[in-house]
Length: 362
Image (tube, rainbow, N blue to C red; front, side, top):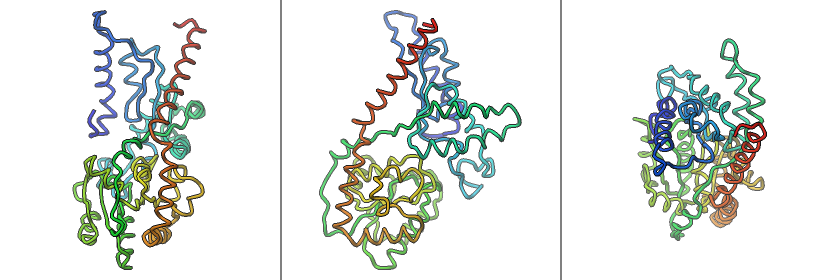
């Protein structure tokens, strides 16, 4: 389904998907009947309880996995109560969407989180979330949910990115890349503030600002487009071919995010020999080898400026580190991640089948 109207997707998406599922798998003509799948794999944006209830004639025997790429309990709220997804609640979190995540986890046989950080943060916040409710708040479910929750990273198309590799002109100033959403949780204001400082110091660089813009008037981006006009080589959403070219052309990618449960776009940049400058928090420390943390991860804005200044003025050392990091993140290619999903799903399916046979269910 299209990636828009996320609140409505969490309400109505499961109904639409269930209708499509039932149409496909409940065909009465034996000649047209399709074999049932082995497993149901849903993301956190799907109300799994609704989907399973509406497809119960077919799915009651099937194991269900919930993949938590994000969650609506710890996703950060905007600073302004008048903008962003919670503006209708005047900046207050709408607990219903977090409850959909919670109920879906109960319904699932296995819950997968995309990072250790995400899993840890979610379960640290879950008891407080449940205490919002007046009675029968099901706090006793937390240890059981934790027990059936594991970490499984998402995969990247590293091979596809490698096919787009090309040589850069070494005489050009280093290219700094922003390849994240133009949203409050990515903290673009700090990113541009760091670039203004570097520009005032007279250190040459070029700038490519990619990513999707879902906001009507992102003031910090409008200001930066004027202030950094002389450094900009690309501005706005980049189609696949242009985006891959920019990934390879970029020397440095920076995150100033307040929120990152995993970090797909950052890993894509690193896979293309782009040097990462990232906060020493969120999911980022577990994406990089420990030996590079002091070199790539900053604690505060001053640390961000220091690493950025060094990376712009030490091309050889930066490029050598970038190549080593690219080799490290190759482990996230789907060639390696897909078999991990397959193996874990197979264990779940086989385990449930064995249990059901012992209970004389099948």
